[in-house]
Length: 136
Image (cartoon, rainbow, N blue to C red):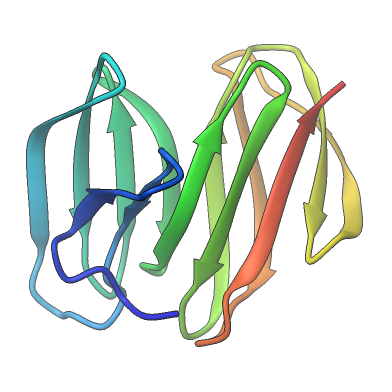
């Protein structure tokens, strides 16, 4: 896998790829329209943040590249790559429990807080890790 040169793009399978952890200067795209929604991306080596319709969807600290992000009623899937231990924050449904898998290994069950956020860490490298979050 590699970083996303165009900051955000729609893939052939109707998923989104975004972010570039290798740049030190902030890159951002506002008002990217896809699938009837409006996305905003901010990315660089310290943070990657994706907003959907003005609300946080996914954030990584430090920055990462996210490939093939798909969001459904059942959960979220994506591939993530970066350079270090990375904290991932997702804003989902408040009070709902989710099972989190990294490379098909169940790393735990989390209940979203009152604002709908869940946080977990993944040790990323330049080989992408598959992340899957199942709504329970």
